[in-house]
Length: 156
Image (cartoon, rainbow, N blue to C red; front, side):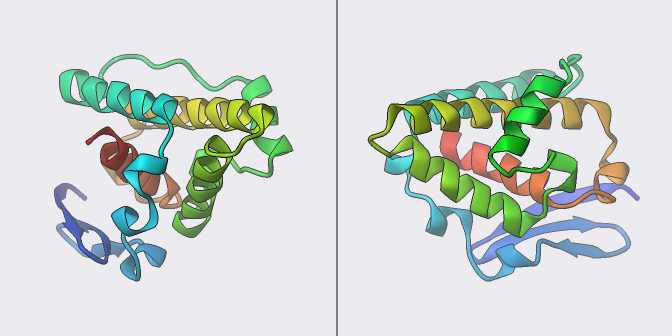
């Protein structure tokens, strides 16, 4: 199964391949730009997003990326987050909303936790994209796809 193109619609994201169309179920109703205002995304999240999109344009995931450590997975578990491969599109949108809210809170600990979790998520995505093929990505939940589109949105 070879990917032909991505389409970003006003009301959702659709990934098209030769045989069928993969729809992100939750994203058909709403768009990422409708959920998040660029002004609410923290500077740290924007800089990570820019770094990610720059690496994607230059290297196209051919660079070996480090794995997420068990300590980082445990940090995700303490806040109720699943690994990226097991995160659905709806759950990822909820997590991103939560991280943006935490980064805008007045509590320094919540801001720090938001930045750490976002950093872990970007690290997970880099490793996932570098070590899986497009055909095997379709077997996992669509959370990685939502995270990637959010990073592209935040970087622009």
